[in-house]
Each structure stands twice: as C-alpha cells, then as structure tokens.
Amino acid sequence: MEVCPSSSYHIGTAGSDDFSKHPAVRFAADDVNFSLNTDDDSVFQTSMTKEFNLAFHKMGLNEAQLSTITFNAARSAFTSDDKKKGLLRLLKTAHGIDDATV
Image (cartoon, rainbow, N blue to C red; front, side, top):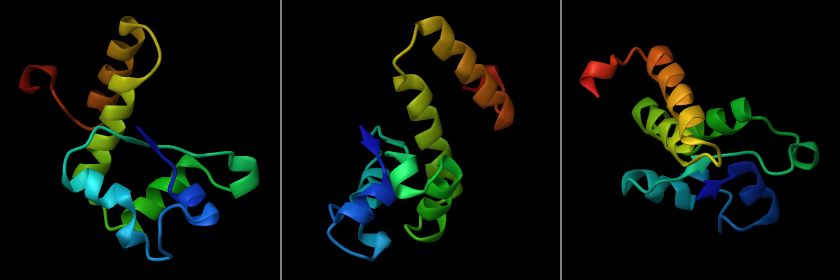
C-alpha cells in the first residue's frame, strides 16, 4: 500500500488537518506493510524528503517506523528479486545493519 501524506491532506482524504490522525499513523502502529510516496509532486510541490519530514514531525512516526517503512518499500518494489536484494543490501549498509544479524 502506498501512502502519500501531502496528497491526502490536499485532497481531504485523511479526514483531518491534524496529521497525527492520518491513517498511516495507525498503519505504522499495527505494522501494516506500506510505503511513503509522493503523489504528483509537480501539483503538490512535494518530495520524498518532505513526505518523510511530514511523517516524522507532523504524524509523529519515529525513526524505527520510518526505517521499517523504507524497507517495506524496497521489499514491495515492482522490480526483479535481484534488484530488490541489491536495494536491501544498500539500505542495510546505510542503516548499519549486518546481514548476519537479520
């Protein structure tokens, strides 16, 4: 599942101007497999950096949740298994995770 917080806000589908009530907060608490994304960034003037900042500062998601969301996106990407494995290796390195511990 893809979640686009800025888009949800602008088109009114999140149900509130209070981002802490965005459905993604519950998704993260319940360990639902979802990813943060942009939705028509030229219209909503957003970026992945802005979406992650919004999730952290306005939605209250913590670093561990954002890391999980990032790994979820890599595991669920519409690409080959080899490319997913490569992406996961890069993420593990960036997050300081040793393959032997996962």
